[in-house]
Every structure is written in structure tokens, then in C-alpha cells.
Length: 292
Image (cartoon, rainbow, N blue to C red; front, side):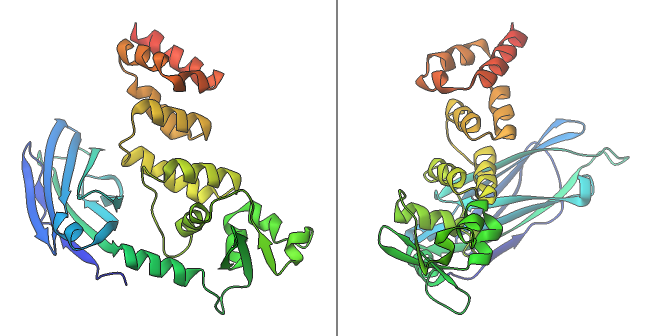
């Protein structure tokens, strides 16, 4: 099953242009660095190295990192953690409130759960097995997934209609879901189910496609968050995904990244450029005009 939670809390330290803290907690090494960009803007970076856990069969780490400071709006800021690579970096730029004290004191803590391949598989199989909480069966490529109709109906307009008495499928004991791969569909549901899988670069595009087809906005939101904060995709790829699936914030960020005429010209040469909508091309053109 899933291992114990790994937690760490740093001391409150003033932000300087240097390493602020180095720690190792149960196989997770963390190097925290800071930089002062302006009198009210700071940059914080965390480098996580969990190679030891990776060597022991841990597939991923997921959880949350929290930043705390009296200078931060609401006193804290949270960042979701979804690590698949043995070395991962989290970077954030924060606008802080100015005060009489020239020092900006910040602390952080993180809480992650290491998951092995077998743990993830076991949790997934258990989630879709028959139980007192399941009242519907979906058939995908001949395989059965036992689900809770009310839960899926809450998550998706597609399933709300599918389970409705107005459709013949709503009266069926076993409902077939056609034209979808079993593993892909199970992954889609695992994003919204309590086992709470997280999107990554390998699954993001497929999840956006399925979330669009089955109308599950919560999945789209989680993928969008990953693409905005953790993805290693090229900006042109992010731009195309944002355009195709109408991810407004990601689209604006990707267009803003086109900060030189050279980058804009390179994009025009990409095959993805021809697939962009007229509206997005117009925004790119406007962006290029501002660079002239």
C-alpha cells in the first residue's frame, strides 16, 4: 500500500540571494534558494532529489508545499506537488507587502506521499471493485468498472445524462463505453476519484481529450494546473493545447512567453502553427506588434 507521509518544516529565515535551507527527510533531499528581484518581489526555488526512494521502487511523490510569511497575502501560499522524476524543481515568484522591516522572513513546509507501482495499481483496482458504495457498471473494452452513479453524475454532465432515466443506458445494468482505451478511461476516472492520481506530461494531452469528451471540468482544471506550473513541454506545445482546449490562463501565459520576434518566427515555422485558431493567431500578431 501507500507508504507513510513524509513531512518537513523549515525555520523562518530572511530571504537573500543565496541558499536558504538544505534538508533531508526520509530519502527526500530539498535545497531551498531565494532571490530578491525588487523591493517587493522575491523568487523562491526548491530542488527536490528523491533518487534514493526512486531506487527503492517509489514511482511518484504527491502532496503539497506551503509557503508562510507575514509579507504574503493571506499569510501563506500553497503549491501542489506531483513528482515523477527523481530530481524536480519548484519555482515561484511572489509579490510581497512592504513593511518597516527591510527583511522579508519566509518559511515553508511540505507533505508528500510516496507511491509505488504496486500501491497505485492496488488502490486503483480496489476503487473500481464492487462494493456497497457502487451502484453502476461501466464496460470498457470488455472490462468492468464498478462506479458510483451519483458521484460521476456530480463530476460530469456526460454521466449525468448517461445515468438519467431519459436514456436507455440509464436502465441498463451494465453500460458500454465505446471508442476509448480501458487504461486511458481508468486513468481519467482515477483523477477525480479519491485515489487522486495527478496529471503529468505523459498523460496531460490524453486527459484533456477525454475530459473534453466526457465533460469533466475538474480533470481539465487539474491538467491545466500541471501545464501552468510543472510541465516541461515546449511553449509552442503548451500554446496549442491551450488553444485547442480553451485554457485561457495557459494561453495568456504562453503568448506572453513569446517575448522576442525570433521566438514568434520560430513558432510560425512549426507544424502546430497552422492548427491554431484565428483568434489565437490574432493575439499572437498583436503580441508581435508590441515587440517591434
